[in-house]
Length: 316
Image (cartoon, rainbow, N blue to C red; front, side):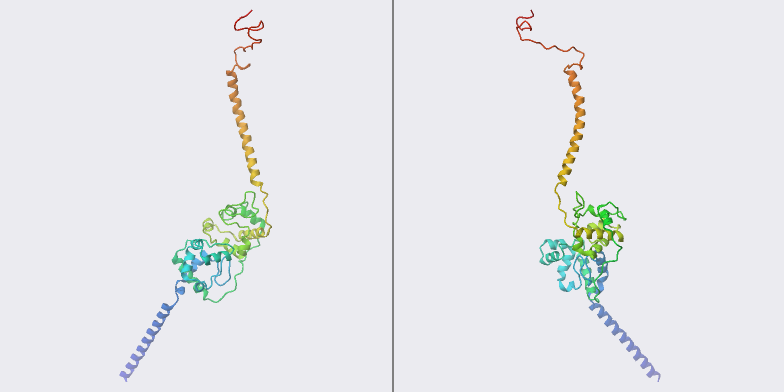
C-alpha cells in the first residue's frame, strides 16, 4: 500500500512539473512571436505625443497631416523611416510620394523634427500597434472658451502680452492687414491658416507646437486656453475677410517723410556751423564793423585824369 501511494504521489508530481514546463514554453513562444510593435510601443507612444499628435491622429481622421492608421502596411517601411527622420531631404529629392503628400495637404511640408532612424522605428512600432486597436470616433475640436477676435488681434501683434511671456506671433508670422510694415517673414504667412489646417489643427499646433522654432520659443511658455481661443477666432476672421489691395504708397511715403526729417535736422545743424565760421572770415577780410583798421577807400576815375591818380602823371 505504501509503495502504491508513493508511486501515485510521484506520478502526480511529475504531471504537474511537465504541465508547468509546457505552459512556460508556450508563454515563451508567444513572447518571441509577438510583433515588435507590442514590445516597443512605450518609447514610440511618448514620441508620438510629443512630436506627432499636433498634426496627425491614428484612426481619428486627418488633422494638419494625414491619419496614420495602417501606414505601415500602405508604405514601404524603409521609406517611412527615412521620411520620418529626414522629411526635408526626401521632399527636396523630388520623391513622388512626398511631393503628392505636400500637394494634398495644402503645401504644408512636414518639418525635420531631429529624430533618429531608431526613434522613427519606435514611432512606427507604436503606430502599428495602435492601427490594430478598435476604431474610434473622429476627433472633435478640443473644448475651449469662447474666443474674442479683437483680443486675438492684440495678442498676435503684441499689443497685449502673452501670459507666459512668450514672443507675439507677429515676431515671426504675417497676416493680411497686420499693418503698414507687415509682420515677420521667418515663419509661415497665416492669412489663410484657418482654412488650410482647420480649427482642430490650429488649436493642436498652438497647444503642442510641432515645429522646432515654436518648440524652442515656447518651451515652458505654453499659451492659455483663452489665448488659444482668441487667436483662433482672429485667424478665422482674417481668413474670411476679402483680400486687401495694397496702395503701393506706404513705403515711398515713409521714405520721403524720413528723408525730409533728416534734411531738416541737417540744415539746422549746418546753419549753426556756417554762422560760426563766417564771422572770423569776415574779420580777417577787414569788413566794416569787424576790424579796428580804417576801411580802404575805393579810387574813382581812370588813370591819367585830373580826377584820379595816374600811374604816370601823378597827383596834380
